[in-house]
Length: 139
Image 1 (cartoon, rainbow, N blue to C red):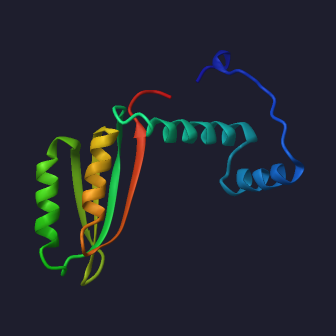
Image 2: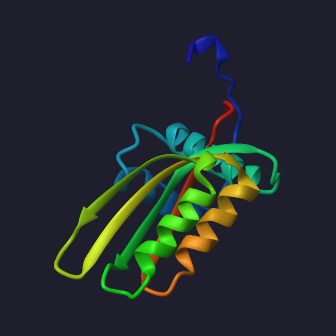
């Protein structure tokens, strides 16, 4: 980003809240408050993008599951094949004798990816699912 594109503005904040914010800035290794504020604004805009179900996003679905669960792998495969147009790539990891982790990289309309995510994370045998997202268009 070029310096000429930056705009300055002031923010008033309660002393206690500012102290907590400065701790966050330090813990996350930001060089200054401005960097932290920019990240918070970007995150808020990404979350707002979820309100538009037609918005195109890219992201990942992370699944932890027990591969011994009856029919789970078949159900996961069927769901992924039925919604293959949203899936860019998948990666499978064996964590231990019983547990697996699958990372599914996705791109598409918010409503469609949310549907895929819900179908996969609600399967019996999936212990944990997490969906992360970023807008494809520049914020």
